[in-house]
Image 1 (cartoon, rainbow, N blue to C red):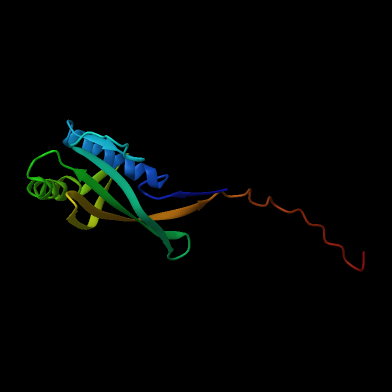
Image 2: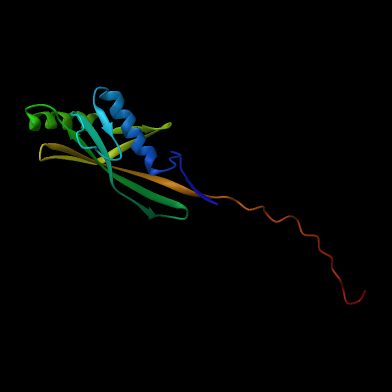
Length: 152
């Protein structure tokens, strides 16, 4: 049996997504958050959290470097959409720098943003290390041996 553990004990990609969701919900309690898909006729303002990509690179022995990229959409309800989106981008740079998952803090990097067709796209990436733990099989017990000689 193989499982991935590190000092962070993150079990899967969704844990980080849930951490982002909880942080946005705490900092912006009056803004709805969508995770799977945005239904037609949704109400603004709202966030949509999308995983863009994730990957894993093998390092030494059982160590791996994982990375996950997110695109957080923000839909504004204001008349001056671009101004509101830029203001929200400034807030997200500060709010999303550290995301808590369990007892660990994950630092976002490669944070960028752009406003496309009146929607803020806030991009961020998380890189972290994991160690593959392999369930140990029982070690061999002591071996009794009998020596037989030719003379006897």
